Structures are given as structure tokens and as C-alpha cells.
Image (cartoon, rainbow, N blue to C red; front, side, top):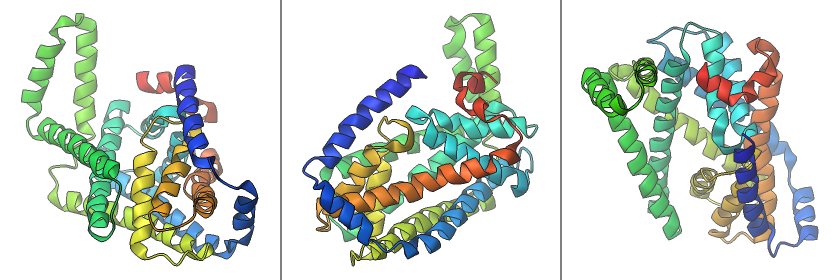
Amino acid sequence: MKRNLIIGILFSSVFVYLTIKNVNLSELKVSLEEAEYSYLIPIFFLSVFILYLRSYRWGIILNPIERISQKVLFPITAVGLMAVVLLPMRMGEFGRPYLVSKRSEIGMSSALGSIVLERVFDGLTLMLFLLLTTYFAELPRWAYQTGLSIMIFFMLILFFLVLLIFKREYILRWVGFLLKRFPDRIEKALMRMLTSFADGLKVLPDTKRVILLVILSILVWLSMGLCIYLLFYSFHFGLPLIAAYVVLVLTTLGIMAPTAPGFVGNFHLFCVIALTLFGIPKTEALSFAILLHFIQIGLVGIMGLAFIPLIKIPFFELFLVKKQIQA
């Protein structure tokens, strides 16, 4: 954990330096003061709606294993996403699987499988938005290259997940063969984990539910872009709707890099890069990035804290990542 934190802070320090380089701090302050904060009200409610969409989508993925009400799942989603924000190097991704395994009969490995599947849907939806934005706007070459690499990565993962569901016995035999070099105890433990992990993918054979997951994923990302577009009005940018999705795509690509808690630095840098593509001065772009960071990251933390009493699990357990993995 400490090593991950140090690595994340080092990367974030570089990103922060690149972000504030050549920025006039006095002008930055003025830009933040002149923003119209009334737009944060609809953005807040839209952010809550996005959180609900994420929780509802996750419930659909989990449904073939165990039906969990949104009364239980929504607080877990809020607190789990907060853990992603608070823990470095995305170690908080284990938060939701751990929490749902404590509040249901679903095993940790199965819950983790559901999260991996959810992230595959997110990743492929992001790539769809990347392709759409390239039609309307000229993006940096690195965005195309990164996007292509990510798309190939998620397609390979999806291919493996599909095989794990439809050709489970074949995959298990293949993996078992690869694990023969390990001690028998470790081999059996890993095979049990993989079998349980596959249970988290039971939604895949259900075509209707998969289509619904695709629709919900698109709605999540459309709503996130709409939040950014509403924030344009707060700063009087006068940018087109497509610019909001360029900001969304590039910022999301940026926070995939190793980072300190809260994606500090890389979130701001890639948001600034996206806005400067549309002629927004760097200082104004950074003021926008600061406020957008609070909305997309800060609100997640605030909502997570608000729901901690409802998950009925001690808060400190979220930080025991090793314990979560072994649970």
C-alpha cells in the first residue's frame, strides 16, 4: 500500500507541475471567482442520477447470482466508488466486491468478476465515444493510439470472459495445465477463485440483459458528458456539446495512469489539454478542471461518506486491501 501511494504521488507531482506550468495564479483565482456556481445544482442532481445508474447496472450483473435490492446496493456503490477515489493506483476497485460479499451470499471472487465485467462495458463504451468524437473533432495522435490499445485490451478481456462462460470446462482445463508448476495447495486455491470469478459473469448468456447493460452504459457516459457541458455555461465558454465529450474522453484516458488518491494532477492536466484543443486559454481551462474535479471526484467522496453508516461495515476495512483480496 505504501509503495503504491509513493508511486502515485510521484506521478501526480509530475502531472501537477505540467498543469500549473505557465499558469497565472492571480488570473486563476479571478476565473474561479467569476464562475456561475448556480449550475452546480442541476449538475449535482445529475451526478446522483449517474450514481444510481451505476448501481442499477451493477445490480443487473449480480442478479443471476443473487438479487440485491437497491436499498443495499446503492450505498455500497457510493462507498465503493469513494474507495476508488481515496486509494492509490485504483486499489479501491476491491472495495465494492468486498462490501457486497459482506452484505450478501455472493463470494468475493464472484463479486470481483462482476466488477471486471462492468469495467469492460465502461471501457468499450468509452472507446465508442472516442470514435464518435474523432468524427467531429481532431484529437491528439496519442489519444488515437491510447484508445486503440485500450480497445484491443478490453476486447481481449471480453473474449476471455465470454470463453469463461460458454467454454468454462475448456478454460479451466487450460488454466489448470498452466498452474501445474505451482504447489498443489496454491493450484487448487487459484482454480476455486477462477471458478467463483466465472459466477460473476452469469449475466452474459442473457441477451436481453446484456442489451440493457449496453444501454445503461451509454446512458452513464452520456450523462457524464452532459455534466461537463452544463459546467461550460458556468464559465461562459460557449463550446459545442461535442467538446464536453472530448473533455470526458481525454480526462478518462488520463486518469488511467498511476496516480495519487483523488486522481490529482492527471485529471487536471488532461482536462486542460482537452479544453485547449478548443482554444480555451490554459488558465481558464485549469479553473474549469479544478471545479470539474470537485464535481466528478469530490462529490463521489462526499456521497460515499454520507452512506457509510448504511453499509454497516467499519470504514477502516475499506483500506485493508490485502484483507479484501484474501476474503
